[in-house]
Image (cartoon, rainbow, N blue to C red; front, side, top):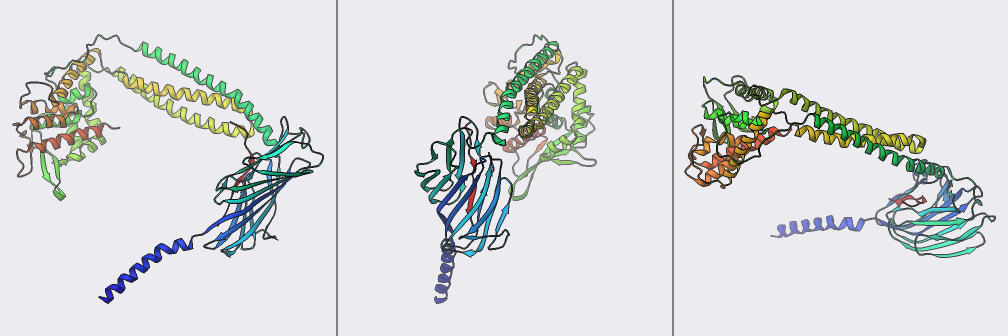
Length: 562
């Protein structure tokens, strides 16, 4: 008993240590102050000194960092950095500062592991091209970066500028602040900043007192804005023109290839219009399940049978078995058999039927198509036209997407290097966008383009009427349904994707014998639920086989420690 209590106590102790240790060892920090000294030079540049006092607690910290964005500047240059007032040379070891030039400028202070202490980090850098030209010489600078995962208790922004420069009005911060001024020095104070809360300094000076030339980035932006304003209407017009002329061309083609057929509407018909193979009717009406109709038709003819077998864990498999039969098969029936069964193979799992047929579908489809042509129901010339339309639509879509992407990427490059090319690139992107929309319309038209002859269209409507009857009958909405109708119309129901509903209806009707070609597992003879399962699987197999604005701020970036 004592050993059990001791073991229990040990487990509880370990669990408590597991949950309490991370909490006690968690690290956190905040900035007591984040001060920025902003000294504007006579040439319009500025020397900026940032000082952050971090208070660390918990697990040790080994570095602090500052990423300074060069957005909307003509460049940022690192000058020096220090920690606790001690200058640091560049390097990656403790006691050094690691500097990586670029946009952003990355500054990382490395120091020995420290916790529960405060340290002051200072960085000084030069920012070029920060004075914006306009009605005034304007400074807009994000003094506190937009990304910092710590709070700031207090921030003091000190702005100095040359004595000869005239300040038009007092500088402002983007949050409530206090200010004091003396001669050419303005001090602005902000109390309390939350995580990721930035602070933007704005100051306006008399025009042409700090600089007479707009910074390079501003001039480039103005050129870009002007080029964009000019290019966008051209791109829009190019896209609309492509759509208009392309639509006219498609309309003209459709009109030239249209037919004025007097075909009656689909009306529910209780009897098959003729004694024609279900597979042929499936091909005529464009059904995905036509091969399942052919399978059940062959089963009724004694060529195939379906067997239910027990699988693992009580499951049941349905196997399609090839019988020794000398019955002469039609070309599409022989093609179906060759696609489903490998040489010297006598049976195949029903789950594999769709996959096998998908790999050798031509053996079944091409003879069926020839059957329709011989009956005068399919027009090979119209089929070729539909294929050409579909291929053209697909190619047009692919080409338009590629051209659009290239033009957009090229437009982005031209914005920074040569805005004059922007007009042409936007026009090309407009044309490609219009072509993309046209390609969709073309593929829709190709899908609706009938490949049937007028006689074939008429036959299709009649058989769709019979399909509507089977659909309503499987829902119990047709009177006088005899039990023998189940097998009589089973293959047609399978062709039209109604196999499961057809079987379920007759299961509810009751008194319907299983077909002689269906062999249920031992002990379940006469269980019509097995037939429902087979028909549900046939519907699934058929479906699977058929499924083919305002001004921004300069500076900013991020800051933190770890």
